[in-house]
Amino acid sequence: GQIMCVEAKTFQPLILIDELCMARDNTSDSVIQPLYSLFDREQRKCFKEHYLALELDLSGTLIITTTNNFEQLKPALKSRLVNFEIKPPTKKQMHGIVATLYNESLTELALTPYFKPELPSTVLSLLAKTSPRVAKEEIRLAIGQACSRAKQNAKITLDVNDFNTAKFKNSTKTLSRLKKVGELH
Image (cartoon, rainbow, N blue to C red):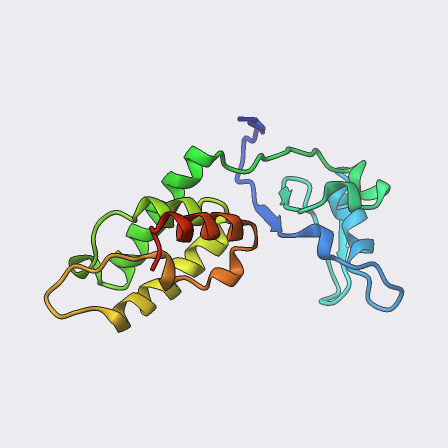
């Protein structure tokens, strides 16, 4: 991966601005305008915070932003940022992420003794086509669904029917194929 090395001889505060692409620039209460001076190393030495009426020296501050669309940002903002592209997980990596999310969910919900330790391959394949955020949400909902159909004293296995398949827009072909093969009831 890409690593950014920052030399610091003293304590270095960190500011994280998540989803910068969502910040809107309007005339009455612009979020973008103060960012121009915050992102500029020289202007950051005497940053004026208008809401609390503070003058701050943020010269030693490391500022990290995230965005879903770097190209959407204004050129003046982009010129003040170093962009690192982070690629989405591969299919194999997503399988590992989904398996981890499943086990973490069972642990957090104190349900590990009642569920099988591994997801069926059909469920794993479906969830691997989503994002980690969606996969985590769907796993938790499916665990609840599976608990409602569980039989006493039997280990529970999640199956595709425990998931809200409408959320898997890209997976409808997979569902149809699985139903034809007879892997789904």
